Length: 236
Image 1 (cartoon, rainbow, N blue to C red):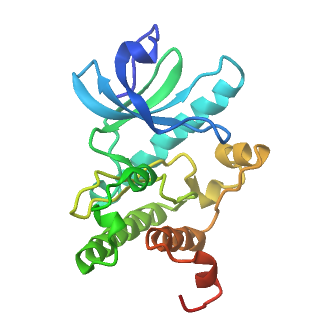
Image 2: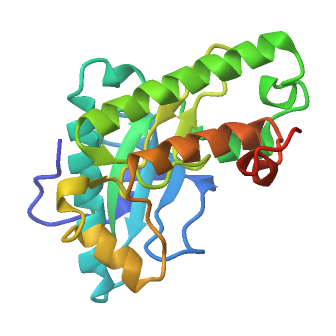
Image 3: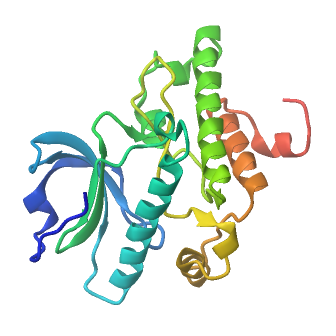
């Protein structure tokens, strides 16, 4: 549930933060941080996504992004079956120094998992049939996630390995998260996120087809295929 405290407390009063980021802030405009944490309210481990406040007018943009992500995630989760392929939001709120979302503890962005996976992990052994089965079943999960997004009249916007979450299990478990760049097509011209992206020089995808293309590029990357050759229709 959203925070109802009249006086906002610092993020570290509400969570014990881990030592290393799962996804570091900075590097691009309005980027969030993702880190393992412990929720002091419920005494439970979580994965925390937060936008650090700056004490400037930028905080109004960060608040809009945070609220936008919550609204779009809730909208998508209302689609039948979406709860099985979309990242659950355990709680969300505003701290005196950040806006945050708490997710289940066992999840991490796929790009982090790929970077730190052991040599015997299935992601590093896709020449093995069993590993490829896990990959294609995960691809099916992401296709169902996109179906839920699109059937709610939304374009996802930035599907890549940083927006897919996994527990790195041998069983298929990919989930789609990070809905801050998700836009309803009927509202695209006035969506604040589109305005922010354009002002920051950050491109934003605005079509269903490009969402599917992004999924194909993600899978090609995991398979270590040359995506430029795929786009030209060449044999690998």
